[in-house]
Image (cartoon, rainbow, N blue to C red; front, side, top):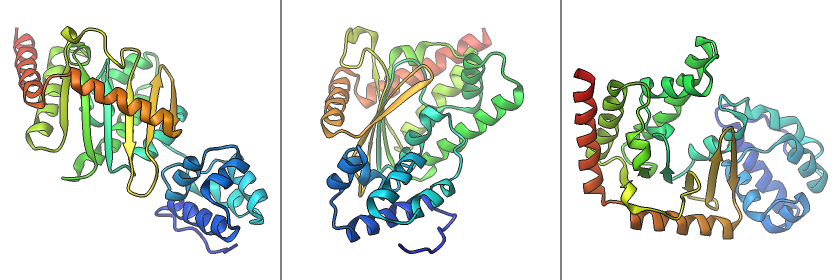
Length: 277
């Protein structure tokens, strides 16, 4: 196994490339290696593409299965400690590599579209007794993550907002007015696609919670579902296909992008009026 040091600028991607070399040297397919590691072939593909980190447990198993003399065990720590909560680490890292992200936001504005004021209010609500330094750190990490949309073309970001996420007042009318204008600016710049799912739509395909779908250039797609302090990244093709259909059903029930923009801009004006009132 090559003993060259990993490039610190992208250790996860390089470690994944080394995994692909070692697997092919052992004449194993992704599915065959996955079977020996008790994960799916898609999971192996994600690790090789650098969209999923190689955990210490898996690194140890990989060294044993591929006979790589402790290489992966030694180097998996070089992927670095994440600044995100443990349940969101893999999803955040995969998100940064995605070519397309589709998200359903049932309760709050998704992290990639939050303003600083909105994010602070959310973190204060999650952790009301946390020191200000902790809130500052969490907010900074979220805003840094949102830079993903600073590229004018990639990734494609398509979001379905439940009407509840638009009408729930986070912080104050002033915070909400800014948040709505922020979303509208992205839409008018043709950087994102947004649809609003109105209350009048009634029961819908994802009434039980949030959903994020991610597609990649050279790796299988992923689905991410999240709860309070927990999250699950799914790579099983049948599960991802099911959640993809769920998202399609959501878009079919939602307002058109043009109607959604009109609603969001109208709400921005209403919140601004409430602020002055």
